[in-house]
Length: 116
View 1 (cartoon, one colour):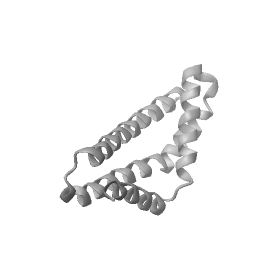
View 2: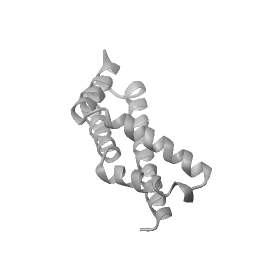
View 3: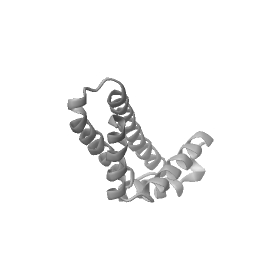
View 4: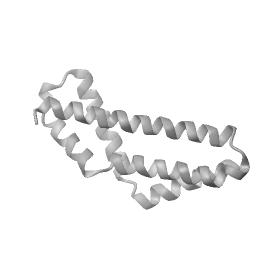
């Protein structure tokens, strides 16, 4: 694979992750503002499931490999692409510090606190 192709593939994966994050924000907003109380338990599980999918994709070995491959092509990237890569890498490192189980518990706990 050409070096610039890895950046494009990484960028597409990041777009997917951003879309999932945006969906989570919409679900959380709905959870906080309009959700009927009887729907809360199911919505909390939906938020947790989507959050887990997001975390799994973000911390996957494939995503890590794309970051590494893209880093090795740094001299082929423009300044904006280099900055995007830095931010993607920072977000990846941050999220790999949180294991799957902790992420799941944290997400469910956050959702549940909306109805205390």
